[in-house]
Image 1: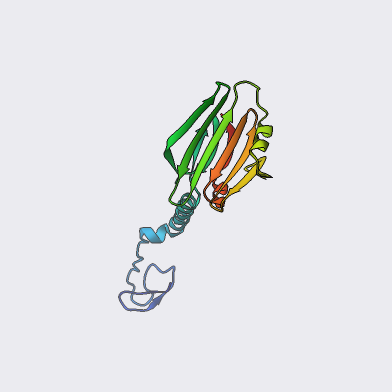
Image 2: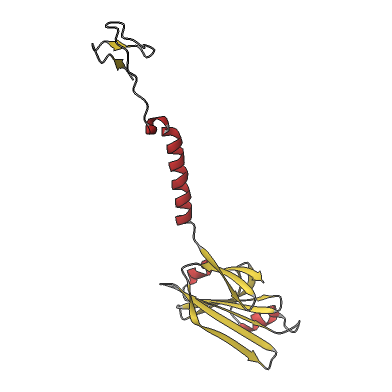
Length: 179
């Protein structure tokens, strides 16, 4: 940036302390805070924008547990008030819970028998449907009247069923495993 003498208007050199024409002392303005810290402030602003964007764009999730099996679903799903607990002859126990957001419903059910008395893959196959691999497990996929879908799979001594009202909601569910 070029400097001029405030007294006589002659062009000055950057290193001049006094004007070579009139001898007046050259007044060098103090750099203000923004000029002095411009680069660090820009870096801090970029870091803040990236951090905020990460928080906003990263989908937030919640961990839900159905009969000691954990699943991860988006945080915008709200637990439906009903929870089903069923016991058949004190041998087979079943539990189901549902969640919904503005567009979609997810229900997760888990059936088990105490001890080693269940072949979960065989039970899942008896439910029927098309054999497929989803959610990291081999199991059976079913489509109901173009309106809802389910996937049934075995996990150790448990049979898990994930029911969704929209096929794309399968992408919202992640199986974490036994607690």
